[in-house]
Image (cartoon, rainbow, N blue to C red; front, side):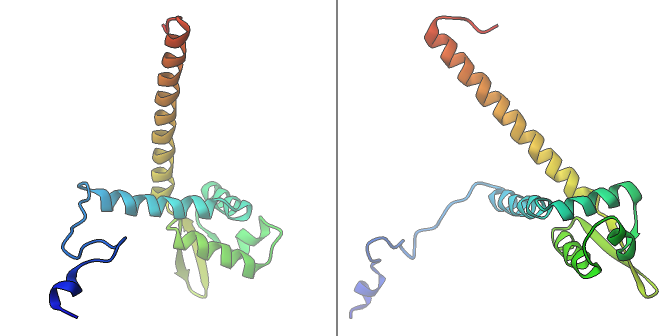
Length: 142
């Protein structure tokens, strides 16, 4: 096989020399979206949502205290707390032999901002759609 033939890409393959261009900040946006997806996935479970609600209301709580607020075992509460911790929603503090859990407000605030941004985008899109429909009907939008 000749050297020139080895560098020619096959059909459907990108050239080795071809560089992909990304918009400035695209990596940051993608990383932020992945983080928010993890937060929403963690909050998508009723038990985890109840644990977050309990921590919001009570501040710092032990696993024993969190277990009394649910109908599941301590081991199950611990597993749910690990999922919340992996999403950055809670952190634990060692107090002797006991582990206390607390809510991290920043990921929730970021998720709320994302939802508000999406809501504004939907409102804008629906307004534009309404204008087009009314323009096609001959009516006017106020």
